[in-house]
Length: 340
Image: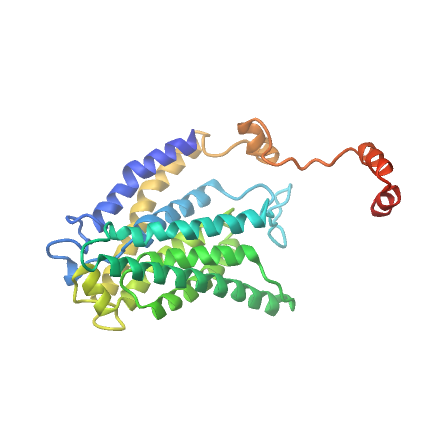
């Protein structure tokens, strides 16, 4: 019920205001306005701020009010753990598969935001979006994995490669390029992706240090890299691409004045303030009504069992006697007893 209420409230009251302000021609930050602010408005082509940062900021507010999972930062007596407890994923293989599915879908998300392909110039914009999306995703995956590996080596002297960090870094790169995919050069997309991967790693560790429990690292991926994507657009938007996609002469700080960068920062601030102002009292109300969190026993048992008529994964072992019978009938008695 709480999820339904939050989904309706978010899509009915939060997103529409952000979309109108940045994407509608009458919006005060819109790049499509007749007289855009500072001559260019805010460029957020496919939604680093409008879509991802809005959702990520909502997740941040929710995570703070909801509190951490049982056993994440404290033991059963409420004492702070020396090291936060990590909950391993069910399947890293499925996580990798899901990441590649999302990456593939992003080609509809970013190039598809041109909304047309046949008019002159639209195909060029869509093609650039596809190239920059690919480069940023790959760069984010590599930079996040090696950044995490380097930090681990410095701290523990061990060289380990974390696929979860790699996959979330890939998503961070995708989020980071979403705002400027139509206006940055390919080399800039790679730079944006590299920085996005690094931002993801440090943002993830920052949340742990602040004892904010984000089970899937949605906040580092969507909130932090959504903000970075907007700011990066204000830095790297190239004149020829900005003119083709938006007909604007003002572009990134590295090419012209800082008008676009100021607008991007204003947009980031507006999204953050609006989401916090609207969603904070809403989540507090859900929490006060006892609707926001399941009881401790349900949390320990798992929502698959309490809400969905059974566990999603059968983790029970076969009976020992059945294994012994199978082993004896297949000539594997000694092997079984050796492994046991």
